[in-house]
Image (cartoon, rainbow, N blue to C red; front, side):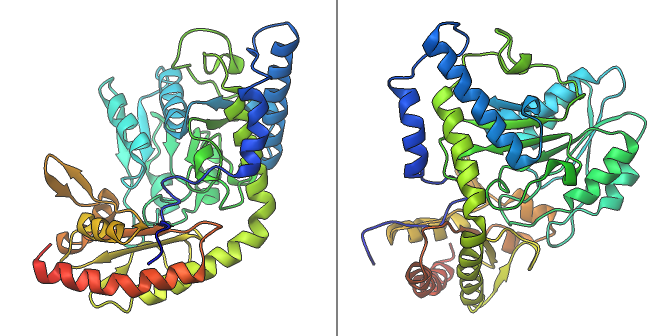
Length: 383
């Protein structure tokens, strides 16, 4: 195998696009002004932020005033959920979400439960799909927020967000969408989705780490979670990270410009990977067979630990991911697969490959050549 890493973990992060770095460089060097300053280089910084905000808004079909730049996707989720919950608690303390959300959502809901909020975790089917009718049935006169992810980060299933959005809009319930995994991979039209808040993370679409985006529909009131200055229309205090803001907007624009070319090629690689992996005995595709992210191929293997698969792949120069988590020396099963009803013998053995625009057919074939032997050997060792 080549010494070069075969990187199949683009859901975790992506490499910074060279064109994005070029756009960022002036704001890391000569254009270093603080956007709150009124002199020339400060005004240049604010102009760059304003332009970036307009770019992002246009891509999402939003107004520039509805776009807030924050520190990461996790902060975006936290600001949306906590901000809406605390701003609305006089009306009620009921939140609706799913058990397959990213921990940035799940742990935030658990945090709010310490303040008297009640969370309904909707069931999902064997593919990780939420039934919009369950959302409607769960809404009460105390419900102040529904939060459902656009696409699952582990199994790639795309949720019926527009349908859920229509239900929430009709019932006048604020609707938050964690679109971190969908950003740059799926079309995002906040008007069509009927989203009131939507979260993105720059480093998922070849932008810089450390920059999140939160869309907040005009008229939605959220309580800021950082106290300080009046940046981001009072929604997020703190000196703006101008370079990363410029990078995030540039990366998102490039992602959507290149989508018609990139998506079919990446999807073909994904389909070849799925077909090859499913030749391995006692293997299963996880997530929806068709309604899934174009770059996501996720599996479960009976009788083997996901962590062990990853370590063996890493020795061969292959970077992938698993949904299981190593905690206190023991491996916990994927919370997503557990919610989808996978038995213990399968839910420990999860493996996720997420492809990117630079992956090749040769890399896919290399992985398909190595993986069956790894699984067979680990089963023989009982790990």
